[in-house]
Picture 1 (cartoon, rainbow, N blue to C red):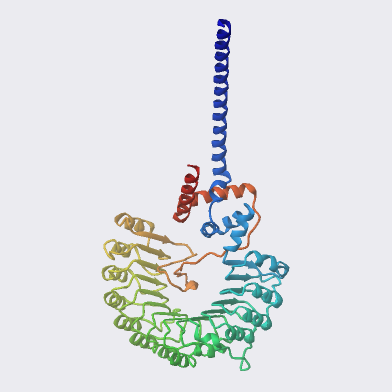
Picture 2 (spheres, rainbow, N blue to C red):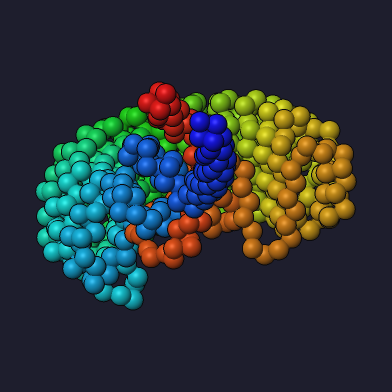
Length: 534
């Protein structure tokens, strides 16, 4: 009995030791497995993002893709089939190389990008572009298209534009340049697209020149058109019926379009009373046309660029009636037909003026002082290529222009003394650009920068000039540009390496941390997972 008890105790002790050893080995194994698992989770969270992305709804992932650059979106589409599908379905803007070899790939491209509403078709001028059949096929896949841009698609004819217009009746914006279809193709768009709001036409080669030209418009789109831009047209006046019939037109831009526009403007302003912007560059217009334009009482923006027949008389007529004028750009082309007299008329009547650009105009201290005194809202001023704007004029501006924020001076006889005047004047001034003013030295600019540290000063003595003082449009031929916000176009996807895809995943993880929508989604799924585990 004693031996059996002793043996039992020994056996029990051995079993206990064996159990403890087994337990310690098991604990060590479990700890090692947990460490490996944690390392794997960390590796996955860094490399694959599977634990985060897999629980995101498609809508959240699409929102993330829309926040990426075009290149990163292309690389994201190569990560997995799901990302490829979501990236394609969430892409609304597409830009394609519209060469003839695009035609066979149209079904596969638009079966993937089936939600495209904004499409750009651009072809190199030395290549053969897509034709009517390809455009008709595209229109069958993109019946909800709202914007179309055509560049150098020289193989498109009136028949292709007709087929497109019949399928894409939701079109709101059409921009075409260096194409060869003619008036019939343009009329087809105007007849079948009642929602068209913006029309931009440049170098449309198919329009017949002379008296035999077929008139364009107005069509059913005339009621919805708000913006018309015509550039470099040999017979731009064939668009006259469209302009006259567009009763709700707000913006009219004419660049280098031949013909006598003095005859057309009285007809336009008689029917179209809501125009707020008119831009004329190198067109045949005189004070007769400006007098007609003065009847646009709602006019806010006027650009007169290289129109030498326009004088102080015409500008004075516009200023007297168009008292809502906010932006005025004048490129006098050194013709000296517009000067103090016209600018004084503007100063007397256009008290809401916020932006004034004078190129090749020779104002004196008399008109500048009146503009500065009366136009208390003047925030942006550009003086370029003027022989009369010197230190005295800049000192007058510094003393009187209280609201001025941006000032651009180019090719004017201004010296360091004029810069010194800005040190104590224009209390709201934030940016000054000085270009090709030989009297202004780097020492003078540095002195101004030292005495007014918050002022951004740009001194450029080179030949390549780009002066800007505003957020609107400008006369780019003269080196003055007022850049607007421009959305970047997104192209078709391209092949990327796996390492690039992983790099993009890292960027995506960083983007996730800053998006409240994704954060809310992650918290929601985290809470649901936690409740299930408990």
